[in-house]
Image (cartoon, rainbow, N blue to C red; front, top):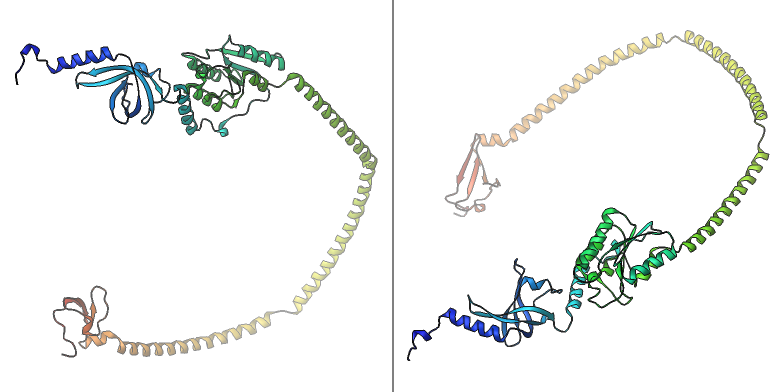
Length: 449
């Protein structure tokens, strides 16, 4: 093999640079479709992944400056169509696709972003009906978060004032589409809450494409509506248009005009209804008062002059007091006579003689009881000493005193009656008349031997 001159030999860096220059000049803008895999999202904000099909794969990167234009979430397994340029990463000599635009294959980017955000917020509970608040029956002030120049704001103001003249309306002007619109809408909702200036908020705009309505599909607007302490009505687009704001709001109106119809009652109808209820209330009170008047007349006729009632009661009291005095005097006389009779009976029935007789009987019984108790104690003492002698003769200590012992297994202290109950090496405890011995069995001699 002949080696060329050194002027024709390339270094690795030189070759890599030429390849890089060739690729970047020939593939500066290409469209590629494939499946995302091995997605990485470092803190730098860039996205790195592998774009692959059935037979090949290539490294791919989207820099942070382009990520802010992508509305849907990248994920492994997602099929996408990308536009970018081919470049070479010189330190490793790897070629890669640097993407500046990416779309999901088969579905629009906005539609995919809409579906992804809706599922995310639904899982978090932002759409739960249990947290939605009722609208005030008759708000004092209504806040409108919408474009100040659109037809929607004019329609809402016109309908509200037609239904309820002199209703106070505060308009917070915002952009309803384009870059920064979602930030302005969420800021307006938070400002209304911070100032507590209104009782209900309507946020919305007229119809348009999905891209036109996109500000109301942003997460920042959804969370501002969710965090609002003031009830929020979402009135975006036409009846067929559904946005994320519609799902989070306390009430979804199909159009801004419908929101204006629902937010406030018709003052004329309300006044007429109040007049009807007022008339009914007046009739009820009038009839009730008439009924009370008739009942009062009836009671007045039945009422007796209290002075006559007092005179009657006074005479009855005098009569009762007279009879009570006579009864008390008679009772005192009867009790005095009875006391005198009892006093005489006590005098003639002096208990001293009976007491002396009972005293002699008690003295005699006392002497007899002492004799009986002494006899009983002597008898019990004799029986006790006799039982004690018998117990002493049967005591195992006397048996041990004559040279016998008690052998137990150790440590369970079970009494051994047969040598076959033990094995060589078993521990035993021997109880003597005085003291105990802890030992080990070296040899067992059975009865047969």
